[in-house]
Amino acid sequence: GENVEQHPSTLSVQEGDSAVIKCTYSDSASNYFPWYKQELGKRPQLIIDIRSNVGEKKDQRIAVTLNKTAKHFSLHITETQPEDSAVYFCAASTTGGFKTIFGAGTRLFVKA
Amino acid sequence: SAVISQKPSRDICQRGTSLTIQCQVDSQVTMMFWYRQQPGQSLTLIATANQGSEATYESGFVIDKFPISRPNLTFSTLTVSNMSPEDSSIYLCSVGSGSSDTQYFGPGTRLTVL
Image 1 (cartoon, each protein chain N blue to C red):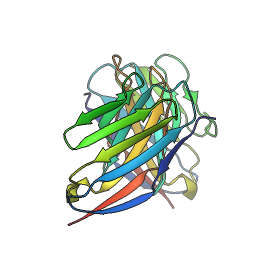
Image 2 (image 1 turned 90 degrees about the vertical axis):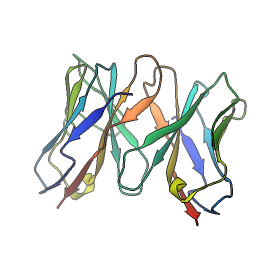
Image 3 (image 1 turned 60 degrees about the vertical axis):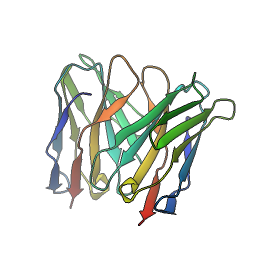
Image 4 (image 1 turned 135 degrees about the vertical axis):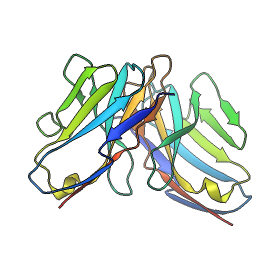
C-alpha cells in the first residue's frame, strides 16, 4: 500500500545551523505534500506545503523541495532557533485530500 | 482556517467502557477525518466521516469498535467502544477545506484506559 518514509527520526542541531528532513513516498499519484510541526502536547500545525507542479517553495526560514521523478521531498530550516524544536511530520496525498499518509516523524532538537 | 474544537480534551476510563469524542467546526466543511496518535508515534487515519452516510474506515479499524456519526457539515463524533489499555492514545479530528487539500487538526482528546 501507500507509504511515506521519513528520515532522520531524530535530529539535533546547534542554534543557527540548518536542518534538513527527507521523505520518500510510494504512490506515484500523490500530488500534494504538506509538512506539519507538532509541539509537545499540541496539535499538528501546517507549516508549509507543496504541490506536484512546483519544484521548490520557500517561506522565510523554511523551504520545501520536491523531486517527483525520484519521489523525494525535503524540508529545509535555516538559521534554526530553539523554538523550532518540535516533531515534524511530512505527508503525501492525492487531490481532494481523501487519504493523507503521514511519515513517522522527526524529532528536532535545537540547542542554544 | 476553520476553528476546530474537541470535547473532552482528556479522559481516564475503565476498560470495557465506551467514550464518545465530539468534534465541532465553526464553519461548514466537506471533509472530516478521525486520526489516532499513539504515544510518540505518527498519525494514523481511522476513518473519513461522511455527512449523511456511513463513515469510510481504513484497514485495521472497524465500525463496531469506532462508530462515527456526522449529522451535519460542522459536527462529528467518534466513539471508542469496549475500551482496553491498548486504546490509550490521542484522538484527533481534522477537517479539509473545500478549496484545497490542506487538513487542519483539532486540539485532540487524550484518552487513558486503565
